[in-house]
Length: 171
Image (spheres, rainbow, N blue to C red):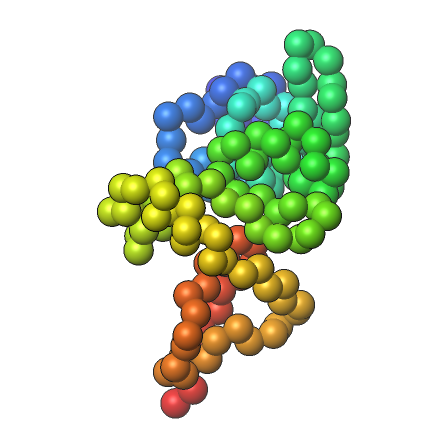
């Protein structure tokens, strides 16, 4: 009803529980883009306040506050909170099973997360998975650097932790 009435403020408690991550991200984008129209016809952004423990839902929000035991621990954009390595970052790492070590810049990934990547899904031995993790090399790429060109031979497998994959096909 609040969406139909075009109210300037909407407060929601866990509005999208039990949804797939892709659906949650889209719901979050839709909530972040809500607008309301006043009598003069002017359009304004709706303030949406959401109580949730689902990080996918708030990816596109301007401001996120991490609350624990009724106290605000931190607030900022999702990117700012990730940079601070506080509670928001800890929740992300726990959920995703991967993160970056602040000191070394090395990607850290759990064996549980590694098993979610299809080539390793059927490896049942924790020792074998630890050996795979030990062989990982972290490489930071800047801007539009090409990591691997289609059709070129490769002696490495690439696991993108953060970033965008674009495939360019030249005809």
